[in-house]
Image (tube, rainbow, N blue to C red; front, side, top):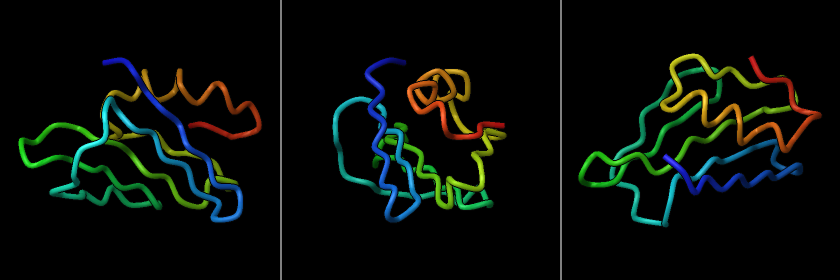
Length: 81
């Protein structure tokens, strides 16, 4: 998977990793620890939202975890676990 886009909102202390082009969210799965995964109507992965990112990011159980971790290296001040 490629074309990851990372959007960070320091005011909201939130970060969103988008996979590919924008499509409508049909289903959101809560992973706990302020993490949500969005899917389209066909079950395709749209993105992952992380809340309270100043507390660190838990990537356990996140789809395409290695690619997400690589994309987050652009934000060296974030703590990724």
